[in-house]
Amino acid sequence: MSVPASVQWVGGVDGHVELIDQTLLPARLERLACRDVDTVIEAITSLRVRGAPAIGIAGGYGVVVAADEARRRHLAAEAARAHVLARAESLASARPTAVNLRWAVERVLRTIEGLPEATPAVSLGEVLLAEARAIHDEDRQLCEAIGRHGAAVLPSGGVLTHCNTGGLATGGAGTALAVITTAWEQGRRFEVFADETRPLLQGARLTAWELVQRGIPVTVLVDAAAAHLMKSGRVAAVIVGADRITACGDTANKIGTYGLAVLAAAHGVPFFVAAPSSTFDLAIDSGDDIPIEERPPREVTHPLGVQAAPDGAAAFNPAFDVTPAHLIKAIVTERGVIEPVTSKNVAMILGTP
Ligand code: MRU
Image (cartoon, rainbow, N blue to C red; front, side, top):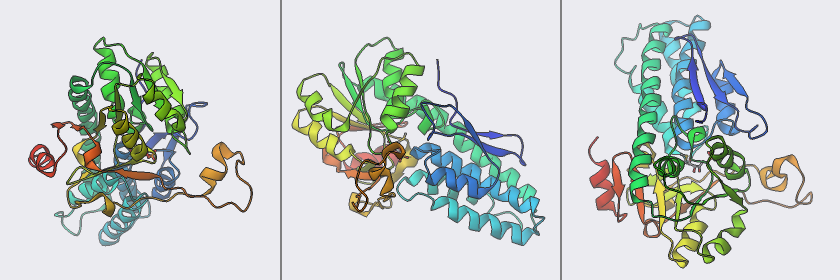
């Protein structure tokens, strides 16, 4: 069984974005209709929709919602365009680390750049919607290609993954999780381990849910058990997704990823990253220049809403960390596998569209 689409556009140009509210999983599978930009932004910032490609797709559709807001407010052409541009900037900056969000918003916006100033909101919306849909459709295909390329290089044996990189996080089958599910669909059998992924438990709540939906056995572990598990020899590969990859291959991904990469190196376990080309930010060379989102302390002090630290305790809650390229065996993209991970190989695989 496959996983329902995490993001979709419902209706025509005056339609809306519909999201699976991922904060409710695995207990409840509910959809949220976003008819205004503030609702889309709230959904992105509170992780109702999450995962780098999925927030890019939601952001792209969010720009269409902005045009529809302008139509509903009967704004004249010039004011309508100004409204779209202002709301697009708010969408693009809703979360700072995953480059896919700004990439998608800017790509959608570029389609109206050359249109006459007198273009009414509804016509802006039509052009924006076509591009937002194109990004969504492409993502489905990218996931398939990533799954295929990744399965070809994934060694036999147990696989450990972190956070959620499946259908919920993308417009298709996922990135790292697509590699795992593709290998499984090819008939290979292996243990799949999912880090629970503190503090928001994307691994336990979402990755395990997706694998259970697909009938693939999964074992969830607390993040702190990864070292012990690797030492036991049950992990032949670690594979994760990415939120931003620099020109040299330094990779930002969910907090805890860097630690896993260090552990993998210490145990001689190959560490793979799987991501589409839209996750690369070739304008940045060093991972030190990737902005790291800091999230509210309450996510740490009150996991799942239950108080776990005393009042008055501070919390350190970076949402992402950066794994240096030298710890990554290969980066799987829709265009092929980057191995070894060097600036030259990144440019070679991504240089041509
Ligand atoms: O904070 P999140 O849940 O949006 O973080 C998501 C991740 O870190 C994923 O691993 C990454 O976006 C890749 S999703 C295909």
